[in-house]
Image (cartoon, rainbow, N blue to C red):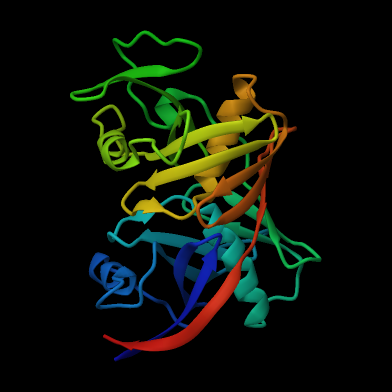
Length: 278
């Protein structure tokens, strides 16, 4: 059996996109791992599935699977690629598209320069919605202490952007212990559903550098929801202004949070198309 796919990327965060608008596609954990494998498959951080509208007021269904095989709630960089995909494939001619994810509706907006803006919805700081167990911990300026066995006390701010996020401010992202702290925080027992871990360096009130260790995928070149979470935390703490350029290792994202919803704007590109023998 052969499966057709499209390889896409947004700021270096790369995806295998599958079209399930004409026939259903079942993405088992085994298939997600096979497609995501960079040596024995196609290679991707996540697998995106484009589905027909699940109901009125929504143009498409949007499902996301990590390359580890887990289905997840949200992917902002993937959402930008989603809009480019459905427009390039002739599935829609709209410049504004509404898609249903696992837990929210996103509005995707095509810009005249080819970039895509995603209305990511409002951030959610309620601990049980992240979810994060803060019982027994003493918070300080909306940050929570976790004690690493080698590195000692680490302060994280937590928020949901439709998926769980932890944000740390660091002096220099190049020397931050992402490889050590990333997987440790990602799987910390206080995060019941694990967590994306962002390491943010504030350059100015309008500019940050960011590295993100993603839940189930490891460090990626960019993470849209992680960029939104970092900027939201920075604005909440008074470090950042409402519009911020986020320099990820794979490219530039612009995040705005001046009203209820967070807006993310960035690139989306098709890399190649192909078939894989299953």
